[in-house]
Length: 88
Image (tube, rainbow, N blue to C red; front, side):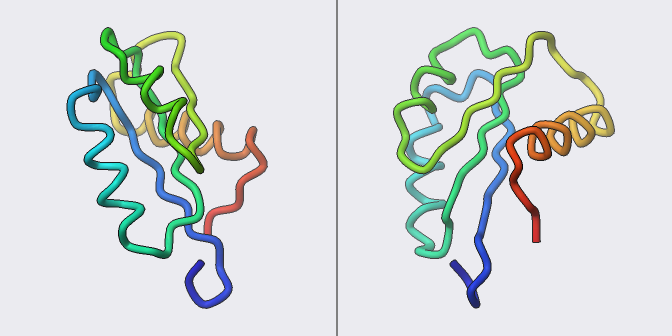
């Protein structure tokens, strides 16, 4: 929490198995993050299974690859609304 506000970090990921734990640990080491939302873009490695093991993490795996940034933004916002998470 930061000033009584919940802090949520959205992490897009694609084939991030080798770096995911390190990135997660660095984010959580900030001491203010309440939740990490990992949005996986159809990784072909173990990204999703690793992410599911991380505490305070919600994982959303796309069913198809989204290529453009505006579509990614739209999908992330849709996923957050679906999860009933408010962004501050």
